[in-house]
Image 1 (tube, rainbow, N blue to C red):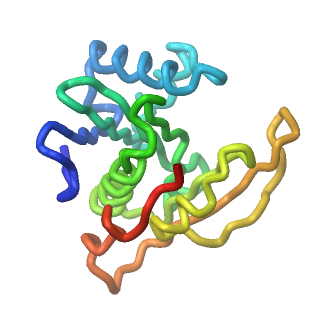
Image 2: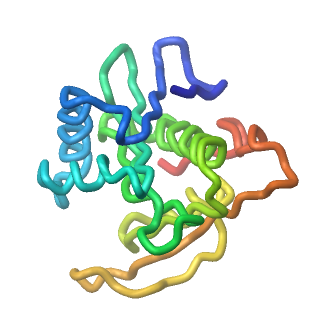
Length: 182
């Protein structure tokens, strides 16, 4: 489990690889994912394929306030390129948005990926409607391009964050470095 400096006393970020969780924890993560992503829920079978495929080192971080899980980021290695970690999903409950929780989750997730794996970069895809380009840029992602479309014809955006061996891993952007849009 890892934490970052900028979280408040009643907040906690948990980080775990898929193979480290039991059935009760799996059910909690599955329920949280489907609550955060109601328009694209995952079946229990699909979620197990994501979280328990040790060959792809799935990692997730949850954000909790007073024991309640309110945010999640989930990712894993690409199937055909073990030097690349793909962020599959990120979400925060509506009533907790615009409080820098997604930023804290991503800072912790990036730190964990680069400290606990040997990947050379982290990639993310996102929908046009989510308008996340500036959010990811503030976290250090670059290389923005549109790489296709989703089934609903919405543009599919791509960005990446490269591992930099020459800089300290704890120099990730911190909470005060930028403001989230409301």
